[in-house]
Image (cartoon, rainbow, N blue to C red; front, side):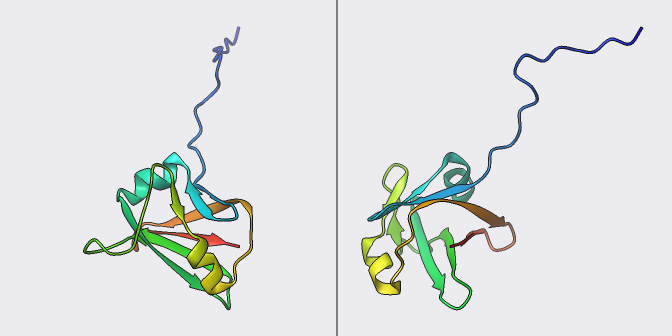
Length: 102
């Protein structure tokens, strides 16, 4: 006889890194916040490839994360970004940065 073990909740899968955009803010899920491990971030945008880069800010510069989000209205207006919704973020360990394809 071959026995199979019952697992009521299944195997725990690592959660995806998600960045959400609203009209005025950028919200990070726990995965993103834990890997950034910083209260301040630097936002950068590649207009040709339509990719947002998020990484910890150095020397106290950058934008402050308030609880789970950054108020990004100025950033959105500067780069004429009007996306809303949830986007997957890819983590680059060597750069300690997340990249979000919009």
